[in-house]
Length: 248
View 1 (cartoon, rainbow, N blue to C red):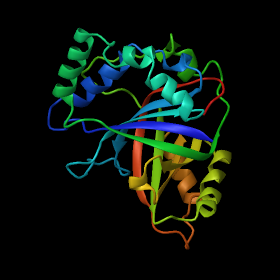
View 2 (view 1 turned 90 degrees about the horizontal axis):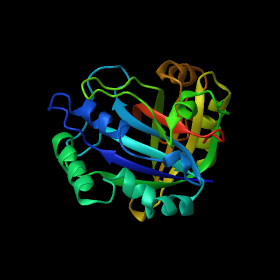
View 3 (view 1 turned 180 degrees about the vertical axis):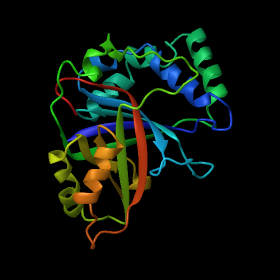
């Protein structure tokens, strides 16, 4: 019922300040994303450990991820092939692209890795026009001060559970759609990769006001059914959250 476009990044954790500069680049990009037909929800996610300690991941794994939700794949493709995409990715001119490449070289390890999803069972809470994810935007993008020295304050928290081996969709949906009645809930969706390479993976993603809201849900309602395979979890802090009054 939705289409989700993600791009996964490995920010150079050994280069001091690379994460803050990466976030600054996103905060300052010329984008009118929220004005596009079919746009529903966006955040830039920084991957974190559940216990707040250092994040330990493989060398080829990602530590940042952009997450954009659309009404459908056609809406995404209109944006992807249009002027708005070019403006947000170097402006479509030589100097803009050169600046983007230099910035990427200074902050990233390797190239970004896109991954698209078909989303099912998506639910979200209503969003007030006074919410910063709406009122804090100008021309379709968030107006957030980023100094390139300090990372941005988190605005939401996402927990994802990756299930492999063609798991039972209905069992996972039953477990995670109950989240919408819990305090701090924002969005829940079940993601199937739009590629044959990961066709046997189903990702349950829930987005919350903060980690405590998710931890309360996990403790009371989020127990994994015994006849489901054990999932592979990932946790994220969301920045630059952007939506419309329709919500996700």
